[in-house]
Length: 403
Image (cartoon, rainbow, N blue to C red; front, top):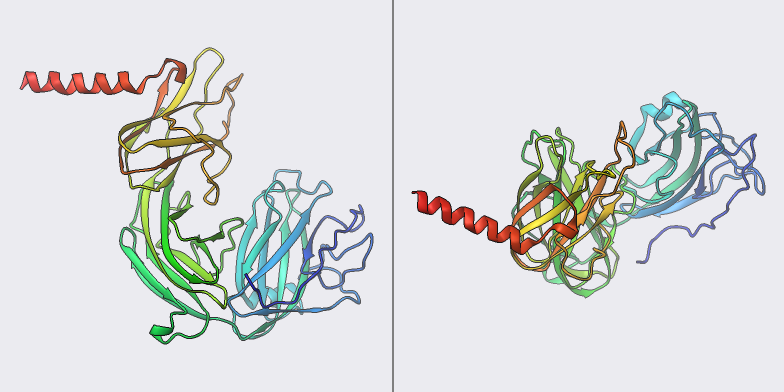
């Protein structure tokens, strides 16, 4: 994808106890001192101010690659380690910076999160300051900034649609008179839910005439930067899962970033589904999948050394390919299973933990499928889907005979 911004060089500073704690690598931050030092500092809003003060050019509504480093022990402690990017019109002081923030988004929640992201630059043309702010686990704050020059870029178009409906979008289609690159956002209305763990499955299909297209789903257009959520669309069905939708979410935004040569039609559906399993009150629920769907189910349930437990997919239709356990909802990954798989043993915890680890299990359906996802006692070696199906049919027959 051809991006209209200044090429920057990745410069990795050697960590020094005096200065190197949490800092911006790319774009090269203001005040970068070279070799063994960098501009990471407790001084807001932009850290140390030195001789290096290059302005980075980026096109409006384009994506700006960013890279950062956390370290030197400041991720320890009781506080939650969060890093955030913000774009403001001024760098005079932290108060005025915060008062003039136009875009902001959390990019990581601990020191083990990915350290790269693409930031959508959804502001008008002009000079701005992009700030990297690390709220370290030891409750200290670290800052560094880069100055950016936002130039005229692609048009931004917003459409409204409802979850569960088919959406059609044409991008750069000459017959529609667009004639120039556009960035398309679809505002998808989320029905109110009482459960904090609903996921949204967005399934794309499209006809490519030329060029490339990147996609993401987030809750605030375009102010949330979701690491790793961008996905190139090809001429077959692909999916993005937005997991763990907060209960107060009213809209999700399906975003499409086209390169200047892209011409094509995009269609997608957005389906809300339940994704939380536990042994207390949600050990099973129904699932209804279409061909090509990839769904993720999350649970903190586990096996013990003396008591095994499993996750089971049961029903009728196409084949199901189940993978896990995964540490996150990998919306841009392929399901690892190459053979149909309806049962996965839950990992063993030698001792009962106070806060068991949350894990995800991904399932790919190669055809329409109606059935259940279930947590059960026992291991997969003792499970037979045929036996389960037989028991279910006998139960139905017995119920009929009693009528």
